[in-house]
Image (cartoon, rainbow, N blue to C red; front, side):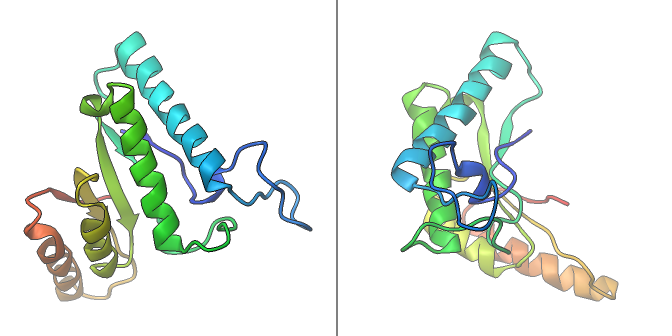
Length: 168
């Protein structure tokens, strides 16, 4: 698997994006500019690694780490954490399709620790795009707590017929 960006929205910013005043290096993404650049970068990464270099072990793009759990960067005005994540995943999907590479990799997400609510969101908003649902949780005290958490996660996506994996 390839981690297709670590932080959302920070990893979708490009050098041309406006900088956030008082925060050196931090930018505010411009979706119409930055999401196509991010998507082309990931598609070209698949091209280079899978098609040109022949890596057969790259089959999944994990789209960000905990993109729905906290803010790692500044979201563009008029967007929400969930909305921007959905836009980024959808842009990546569309770019891979346009480049004829979508069949080379599966998209995995939301890689969130807010189970099962983020899984429900991901299936409702990105069910036509995500191939694998994933999530995790921390700090549970008993085996029963863990069983309950993951039973709820599996139940949340079961009707999709897609796999759910524990990603951390």
